[in-house]
Image (cartoon, rainbow, N blue to C red; front, top):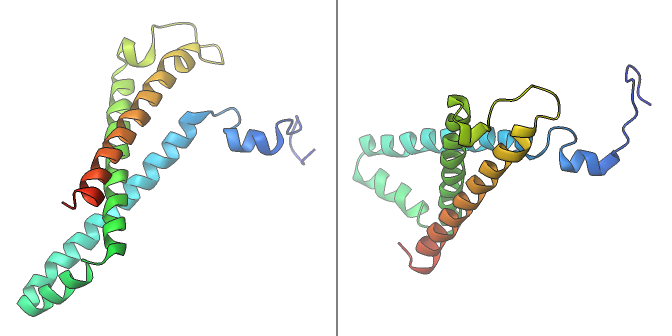
Length: 148
């Protein structure tokens, strides 16, 4: 038993992988933050690349030649995947913050574990993941198979 803890970690590694008492929503939160930072980084890079137009046509063309490589195509796909997840999860968070009954469940006595969270919000989270995954598959098909 660790110092300062009243209860031992009975779940072990499985509890750590499953999120312990936090559940999947904790992972959705972490992924939302990471995708937000990734999109912000892409946005900053996009501004810097467009800034190269100030230095003339040759500078722009040489930079665009670098971005035609397959590695950047994969990076472009990852940015699209991050955007798809971040957008759908953001809509989920707005619905929950608005307190809409279909998003948070009906009001009940706040006793842990919160049943509305388990029964309603988890279904909404699964729908978000499925919608984002579908959009990523369609976008990947368009990018890699059709070559747009």
